[in-house]
Length: 241
Image 1 (tube, one colour):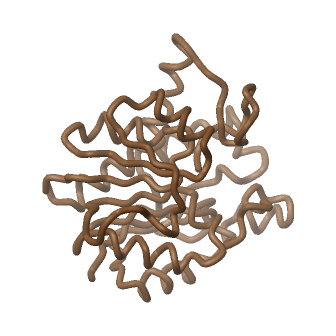
Image 2 (tube, one colour; image 1 turned 90 degrees about the vertical axis):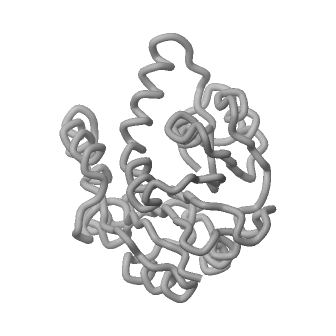
C-alpha cells in the first residue's frame, strides 16, 4: 500500500492524482531512487539466478511494480491489492505486470511458485501478521526472497513524537519492534540476510522538505543502516523451508 495519500479522484486514500508530462517523469524517477535499494538487494541475494516470478503484495498505485518491470524485464511481475481503485489505476500504468485483487493472507498462487515476494509498508495492516508470513513461506520456493519494510515504533521519530508519530494510524494495527519481527520471521523459517532501519523521515522539521533532502539522497544510496533508531524496519530474508 504505497503512494502519495492525496487523490483528486476520490476512492482509496492511496490513490494519487493523475500526472502527465514532466511531472509524471519526475515522479517515476523519485520512486526509482527510493526503491533502488530493493532492486539492488534482489540482484545481490539472488546471486544472478533467473527470476521467473516476482510478487508484490499491497501494490498500491503501482509505483514499485513499475520499477520491477523496468529492472527485471525477463521476469513475470505479479502484484496484488484488495482495493479495486488501486488495481485499475496500477494496471493502466504498468504494461506487462499482472494485477490481481486478492487478500494478502490468502494468495492465489501455488506452493513454491515465486522467487521474490515484496511487502513494503504492508504487514502492519494485518491483524495476524504470522498468517501472512506463513502464506509467503508457502508460495516462495526454497531459497526465495522476502523483502519487508514496516514502521518502527522504537525509532527516534516515534519516541520524540509519541501519539503524534505518523506511524500511528487506524489501519496500522500491528506495529512491532524490530526484535518482534525478527522472532516472527524466524518462527516461519526465514533466514535474515540483511536488515536495519532507515533515517529520520518521521521526525519533525528534519523530516520535511527541504531539510529532508540530504537524508533522502543518503537513504536512496545506502538503503538501511545497522541501527534501530530509524523510521522503518527493513529486512531481506530467505525462505529456508
